[in-house]
Amino acid sequence: MSKFWDERYAPERYYYGKEPNAFFKSCIDNGKPGKILLPGDGEGRNSVYAARMGWEVYAFDQSKMGRKKALMLAEEHGVSIHYDANELADYSIEVNTFDMLALIYVHLYPSERRLYHKAFLSALKPGGRLVMEVFSKKQFGNDSGGPKDLELLYDLAEIKEDFPSLEIIYADYLSVFHDESFAHRGDAEIIRFIGQKK
Image (cartoon, rainbow, N blue to C red):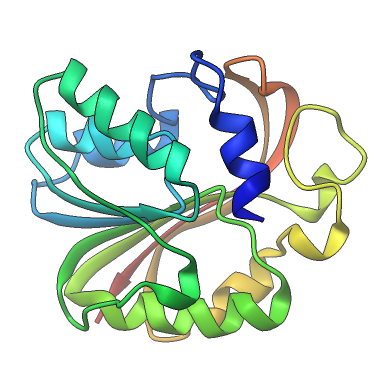
């Protein structure tokens, strides 16, 4: 799978653009800077924005090309980020370490999802927040982005089941117009979720 993403990120242009996801940006802008983990951050648009806003950023992605472009983007903005090129299974997640964890379009098969969501939850400090934006199952068949496999699309009830110990701050299905570069453009069905570790 890393080969797929390396090929996607190989061109000079940034596949999903250089600007952060709008929902993620609003969470960063309204939060107190701390330590943040961004799994699957691709070319770094979100991790670099968080660093620009004063956060201590840790990110990883299976794509070496994604890491390379993320570090280039960080240099372009004069910030530093800790960014590893690792598969989820190979990344060592530190327990009770992060003030925020952001899962922005990190889509996993159900068996992996439950396993890694549990690990991600353990990475949050008490009081830390999980911020999540993903495509819902209603997105299936749309051409505005996202996985083409229904199993990789999410249901809000499943997300709540994966994070039972979080106090839910916000959780909803939304129909939005996506305009995140050419890759995420058009009407889309998404889920946004914010939960706080007790």
